[in-house]
Length: 182
Image 1 (tube, rainbow, N blue to C red):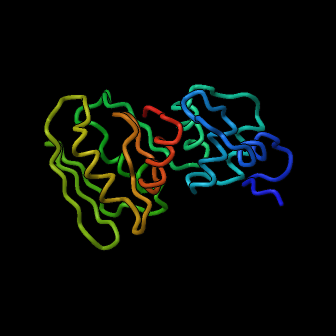
Image 2 (cartoon, rainbow, N blue to C red):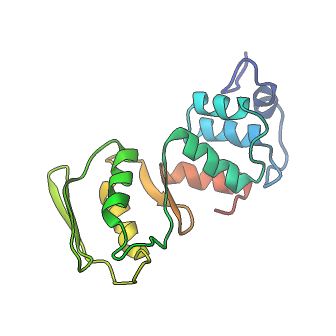
């Protein structure tokens, strides 16, 4: 019986699961990484099949993982330099809410950088440090936390320019298994 998470047209999946792999590191192929992401519940099988079916794609593990998260619809990317004063915290909060499958109500951003919104009946208020055109990354982290859904999935930072909505334990396992630098 095939123990692969991808029975069918993806031969790499069966060989990945059936062979004893002595050392898996950053040299792992896209199929191996995608298969593990599916096994860990980080992405769906359909996302992996569609992404890998479109050609060779990205081969650098960290970029591949980011691309797969984007294809899954769980990635929120932003430029820390927003090019507006104050930065577009409201738009960023809306993007977090959209990825989480929820909404922000009564979203307000004042000229003195204060952001507030209602989420799940609770009012959230943030006062970012005035960093000109740059987002206050601590405030971005607080917004991501406030909009994370209940349950094991949370918004987890990927560097300073992205968050991904996943179970952090599963992401940690992926990073350890493949020695991926986020």
